[in-house]
Length: 348
Image 1 (cartoon, one colour):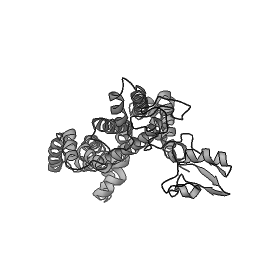
Image 2 (cartoon, helix red, strand yellow):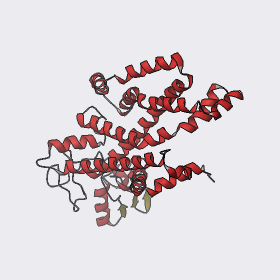
Image 3 (cartoon, one colour):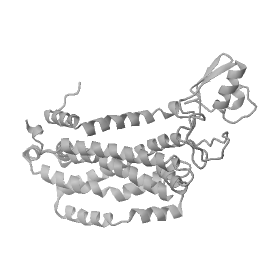
Image 4 (cartoon, helix red, strand yellow):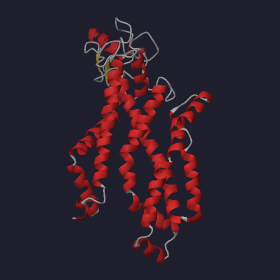
């Protein structure tokens, strides 16, 4: 059983009292958890296929060609058509996900050419984009890409920033002075220009974008950790550990860092907002993730160009982006307030 420190318990209680941030946290957590199972809820692959007495589970399994189910083609089965055919022949049945379209699949079975309006009859609840791809599927998969990309960016930049800031604050002196000048020079590197140069040389991908954003973004956490370590290393518990013969590594890792985690935790929601905003902006400009990766920025770009005759393409990612960023902002405000050391609730 986990035993929390009394101060941590009071911080969590204070966070629960801030209803806007508290409910935003649970809504966002539910959304993130749901993205882990998108292949079961939003996919052009069937959940279960019963054919001639045998059961097949295509969602997370190998690609099943059409000939597996008596069709006359070798590429992957179209399960929506198979469902209709099996219902007519009586040889089996197909259980499809609630949204039976994949994020990369172009649906050209509709009468009108894409983009197609939202409709419950054809299953495209938010319509299709210029390529005939389901907007709801691309929104949800794009949300998963943005969330995990931003979280990876946060972990990477925080790790480097905490390392550099801790060393600067602990050792001080000439090392601190040298690192301050280095960080100041590093912050002057223009991120967008660097991405434009890299995109002109090689095809951008998720790892390249993550590497560039980490390369230029680790300095933000450095100043915070430097200030925290400077403050904590002057306290009596640090002096006591040093007098007992503890080494530098043990003092920093075992004593200083655990007492300096407040800025790391408090900045998580705001860092996530920054990561999602950066990825969406780069995708919108065409320098983000490679096509046809699901992306909110790419949908925004499509929607702007087609707003006169297909406004639904722009409206869906716009409202989704605003909604998710507001959730993170509300959580960030609640975390910052509940972790504020000046709050009386922490000392009651």
